Length: 188
Image (cartoon, rainbow, N blue to C red; front, side):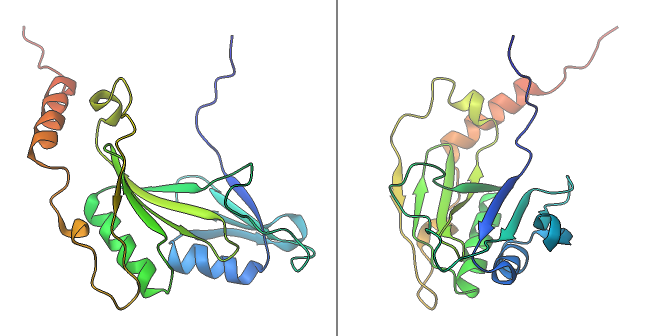
């Protein structure tokens, strides 16, 4: 018998500057503060469904604390999902408008992702995943990742943000799965 975990509950970060992190996670990424209690854990933020999704608290000595760095063991990034390719484009633009550098973007076949960091250097990802990704890629998606162009604030946006994605062949596959998943009418 195994543990029956129903979902990932929340992530808790120790931060160098609680107010800067509060600005970043609320004003840039759109989280809402559910509770702020510095004596018992810091800032609890939500995306609206659960009481808290991402929490953060002030580190007692941020100057001497080790910062996250690429190549370390542990958390690589936290990923946030959006509902459409248009929403991914909007997120990309919003990040640039807030001065957030997008480090790289990737087409993973089943999803497109943009990668950046929070004020403390924690890796973050925003992605759009194709509907029915598990059914589309039952054997996995292979390692055919494609690097996508990125731009800096003030530069032209990459063309892939404006592509019709997924393309016609993948859309047809999604429509076939949707048709199979629809409840069939009961005949008397």
